[in-house]
Length: 461
Ligand SMILES: Cc1cc2nc3c(=O)[nH]c(=O)nc-3n(C[C@H](O)[C@H](O)[C@H](O)COP(=O)(O)OP(=O)(O)OC[C@H]3O[C@@H](n4cnc5c(N)ncnc54)[C@H](O)[C@@H]3O)c2cc1C
Image (cartoon, rainbow, N blue to C red; front, top):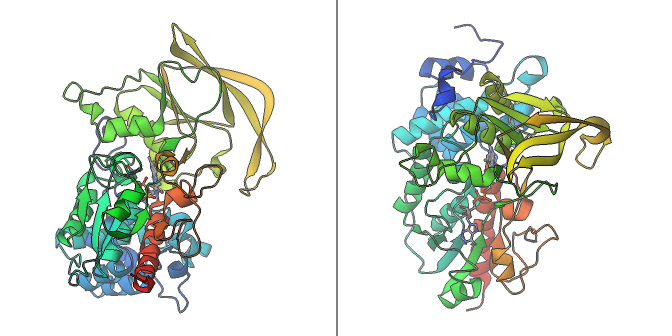
């Protein structure tokens, strides 16, 4: 078979049909498609893709195994560094990581590493290949706060070192944003549940509805015999626009909106007791993955016109490229260089959003050109508006943990070993970095498992 210069396209659900269901949009590669794409890898001497992967998966090696039809070995190669391959294959921002560094991208399109990882990850899941063998328990207990990717990676790392691990989760389901934030049409929940099940099989204990800082404090965890604690509580507190009209009925924060749809299944109303009423015309403010998820979810709930309001231009949209393409295919309208300045209502219900027209000025600290107001405005009719302009850590834990140092924006301060200002308390993921990515959260959770192990070993008891 001739090697293709352009990457193998992934089949997707029909763009009209999928607007009224929550089934997965991207359908994955068949075996033949995966092999055709794997053949494009030129097996570089110095694979830049590996260095660009935050957890340094040996990408050329897993692709080589795939080409040799050694799928079990391909899975093991990925799984050694990444315990969530089916998830990362679906949601990682590959264009700015592994695929962004692929040498083929210079002259044509990079190898579709994410799609291949998904193919191998799904194969491993179907065949139950995840290595859940663990050493004997050391009878040393460690506590993990939060069951998002940071907490899961940390729990896996510590259990593999023989610790007795308990994960405390505030919600009634495990997986963090993977469970309550990212919709099923991007990440089916059976995949998240399968990964949690692997950890349960390894003997990790999961406690739901446990809000650390309220139900129990970190001091109490130490009193209960936990030798060390990892905080992976994420960044679930939404930021507001700070403009008039934000308290009107019909104004949602994306996290709340997505949680109600994904976790509380409000889309199944009347079977679910938590309906969300959004009407026909929905504005979503923001340009990241969360905004794309909110917009595409609003479409699936029946909104006729959904538009993204974003203050910069298209090139600056921080969402994954695939999500932007899928959103456009689903008739999401992009109203760029528009910044909301007021939400207008009638009888306390939203009716319109007034946006200032923006232009791009000099680059700011993020390296992107700063949006500058022109003084001109434009007004859009709306039935609801979903705000999705960023999240920060919830202060519950910080406010109830004496001595836990945080930045002014709420992020926990850690040293190079991921230890916080409290000896024995470590932290990673979004609660340290601010809203970031699944793979970065996993990376710090995994590293912290190592440094927590060293800390416990060196501790005089
Ligand atoms: C809608 C949405 C879409 C996204 N899309 C992508 C994407 O496509 N690709 C990508 O790479 N990243 C994406 N992200 C970002 C990514 O999901 C996060 O960076 C990642 O989940 C952070 O992992 P974490 O473990 O630090 O926190 P989280 O996933 O937020 O998990 C934290 C967990 O801790 C729990 N918790 C909080 N406080 C407490 C407490 N006091 N006690 C006990 N438990 C507590 C929370 O309930 C939660 O389950 C998206 C985020 C959102 C919101």
